[in-house]
Length: 635
Image 1: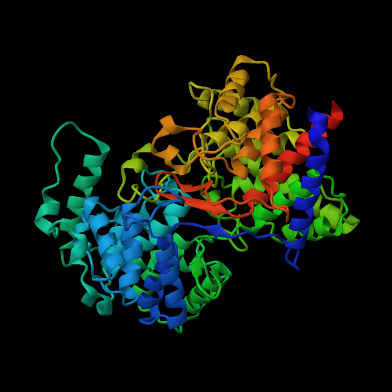
Image 2: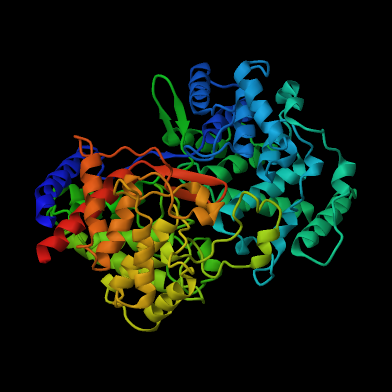
């Protein structure tokens, strides 16, 4: 049966190779669209309205078109494709439309407001949405928990300090300390008055009556702390406040990237712009000019719609595309691969970023996700890029540079292992549990804990570099300890248990673990049990909210590929489920070598924010087909 599919698999591989080669950027990299929910693009209207009091009318209409196209039948907007309506995403999208002069009386706006009220109204929105509304005069700043700028003074050994927050949370909270102190309001926006989104207009007295009875809890601690801070803020004199604001301002300025962003992602970028504007920075200031100009590289625009991407992923996409093309038989010295490898080498990070706070004696090395993000290289990219580079043959001078870059990344990664044996995305031992109860934790994931998926990528890289010994043993022990009762692993950065489980299996195979061990067989059995009748696998973002739905969802090319890669690595190439999965990929492939995939299979902040990496539907299926073909050739 396997041989019957061999010709079709080879043809499918060739089609996808040709497609990927056709979309390579002249500079050598690959970059797919990175899409999020409608509120991100609607936020472009809000941002430009706030910063300049005007929005380009053509672009405004394109954002409106996108929002209307993505509105659900019940009037809501979802956090992910085909998902249920999301309250906060709907409120933020609604605000963008109101700022675009869409009246509340429009039928589609009435449906949206009805949905929002049915879910509890603005009162039930997450805190970052309430901050967004307060900036436009639609919510009372005094009802939002305080984060004083004096937090910048707290020493690194203290339980609550800025470097105990995850990198994305840290950069956002730093900006919020200025906003929550200055409480700026876009006066022009106050006139729209969105009372239609409230169940009951809240007031300060209601805020002060928060329930604090019962036994001690960290939630109560932060509520009490907020009460104290609000009293303190009413005092006419705040010793150290001016100096704190200056240090926060300097931190923000120091962390701006070459492309004008902060951290290469939209959340801290926008709030840093708002914070600096509240300090008097105008549109002509070079920092603001760079920040606004940098947005252009994150905008996707055609004749009808405008999409604002929450981030861009050229390093990640390029590394995986190299791996896919190499694994599928492209020669190691192929021009496309050498050009891509040289581009990746140009993106190596030699700057000591925030990670140095917990690793003061570690030398930098590795890569970030984006074009520019010197402060926050990540362990995922830094593990995957070297695996791509090692597949490419370069001229001698570039070869030496490549080997040095891989060595530096290896040393950096080894020093970034957390004490539990795993690796996180950006930091080491970023696990201060009390911060999960802090304000804004309902949207901005406050911690960057170790996870199976990043650990898996790291271990595969370490094994490729012949690293042996205690660190590998600790990583394997970590994976064994985080396996769930049914055999699955949670996926932090990909959706979800299919991602975590498949990567864990690949990693354990590379580490030399016997696939016949009970715990590995349990994972294999779980994956096979989740196969859909069409031969594919799928899982929705909703499984982060309801884990009992794990492994359930319409089949997608990327998730099917992940599972196949994991099963093939575990020596299950001949299993009927693998054959059926390969058949699914071959039969669902389009004539141009691509697959259609509308579902979001990437995770930003689990439970609240998700992503669709457009190239996931291309390079991961190619890797699965290539490794299947390689495995059957060896049999």
